[in-house]
Each structure stands twice: as C-alpha cells, then as structure tokens.
Image 1 (tube, rainbow, N blue to C red):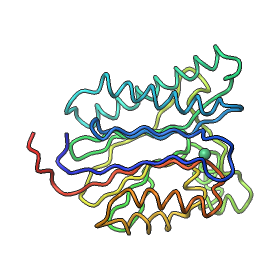
Image 2: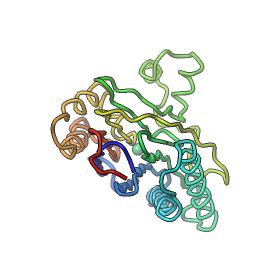
Image 3: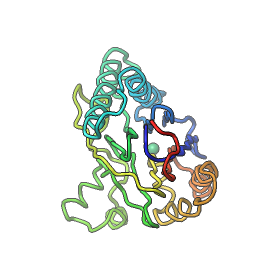
Image 4: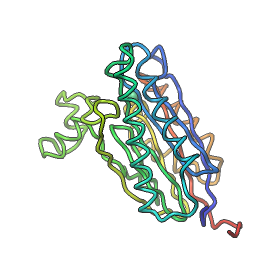
Length: 257
Ligand SMILES: [Mn+2]
C-alpha cells in the first residue's frame, strides 16, 4: 500500500469536566484511514452525530476504497465519504426529535503510496510535524479563524484575548443536506508525524508543546506520545473531550508489492 513503514496510535478521552465523551475516533492501519470527529448537540445527540460520522466514513472505506488509486481520486473519495456522513446525520436528525440539531466536526485522512489525502469540516485539525516544525494543514471552519482571515486580528490568540469565542463553528456536518468539504493532499517524507485531533487537545495544549512531545517521540514507540498528549491536556484542565490519531512515517518498506 505504501513505500514507507507506517505507525499509528490513537486515543479518545472524556477529559476531566464533561459528563460524557462526544468525540469519536476510527483508525484502520490495514486500510490506511484515520477519522476524528467532535460531536455537537444536547443530551447525547453530539455523541450520536460523531459516532455516526465515523461509522459511515469507515464503512465507505471498507466497502468501496480501491487499491492503489491516485491521490486526487483519494481526496475525492474522502470528500464523498464526508458528504455521505453529513447526509446520514442530517437525515437522522430530521427523523428523531431527540436528535434535532445534532452535528459534528470531522477530519479524515487516507494514506496512499507516499501521500496522505485529507478532508475536513469544522475545527478538528490536521497537523504535520516535519523537521521540528509543526504545520497546521487544515484551516478551522470557525468564527475566530474567519475574523483572523479577514484581517481583524493577526492571530487566533489575539482574537481570543479580545474576547472572540474559540468554539463557534461556521461549518459542521448535519446542519443541512449538503456540506462543503475542505481538503488536500500532503506528501509523506520519512520522519513526518501527522496529528489528527479535536479542540479538546488544541484548546488545552499550546502548539509548541505539541511539537515538543511529538519531536521527543523519535526513536521511541508512538503509543507513549499519544498517551503523553492526552495526559497534558488533562493536566492543563481537561475542559473538553480529548481525541487524537497519530500517523508516523518511517523508512522504506521492505515489503515489495
Ligand atoms: Mn471538543
């Protein structure tokens, strides 16, 4: 499936404040996909929405992902899978009064031969650590990101200091029958670490700390790094559910295919 050896690790944690966990994660190293979602909605509706998103997208990968497709086809596949999830959530929210208004963010990765195709809606994020630098590959669909993009503030931190709420989404799955999906394709290089995560991680742990923990994982297993990120978010308050999925790119694969 790929020219590199790949390692995966993932976690979801309730955090220290919330009564339930409305995040969802689904990862399949054999099929090469990663899904992270953060549900929105009263009672247990958020939990239903994020779980349904992960389920619909994972099912689509299991049933329809073709072997060795080009990266642009994988990006289109991810986009369609996310649109399927959106329609399923929207349909269920219309059918069940208890689930009315439910929604979720989602960020999805599809790993191919030397590339990662990705798609997302909302403020769950994708980062890539390369050569000691952590770069956000996604761009939040949030009000705070929008005021930064429009030039009212130079950074999200500035906007937050001014009192702009960090958790107002401008796009989510489930709010209408169609959704606009953002995405792209990133190349894989040896040593890269990709981080898919919800705002329960990024809202608690500064980016330079994320960078340090991931950088420190080189030469070690990936699992302790995943564990350390959850622990850090909890130590710094754990105000929200914390979910992450990691993909680390190793050396050339010895498998010939
Ligand atoms: Mn959250």
